[in-house]
Image 1 (cartoon, rainbow, N blue to C red):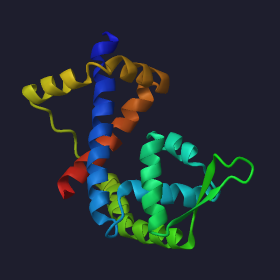
Image 2 (image 1 turned 180 degrees about the horizontal axis):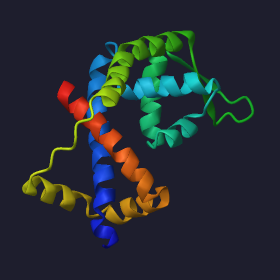
Image 3 (image 1 turned 90 degrees about the horizontal axis):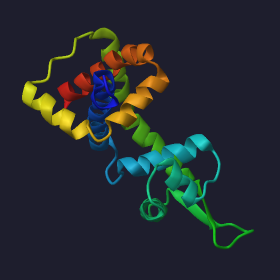
Length: 183
């Protein structure tokens, strides 16, 4: 078997990608009016870090461009959820901290999405359904889409260990099935 057709790697990342997409959709719908998922993610990160971060650090953590992060931070600052201050040692840099209003908004958002998260996790523990086979045409389209990244997927699975991936795959699959069912 070559790195381009590793079925375990393809299955793992297919499930992760689908679960991620479905979870983002469900969580976005549950967030308070005006809050986007990326806003919540930044507020949650700042709240958990409990420390100031530079916009560049945040862009790196969220794997977005500095411009995209600046846009998100501007919206959060306008809403009063963060404070942006200059670096007193280097005027070219800035630091971002969550405000009391931002903590409150983050807590409200977390309260709105917590039932979705815990219902999904609880259902996975109780509902042990097996994976439904993909049709041949669906399998072909999936395989073509993943062919370009298959070597990376295979290397990742090898690094993690095939046995550990086989153990995680049913949980991720059930998570996706639960999210599909409730959408």
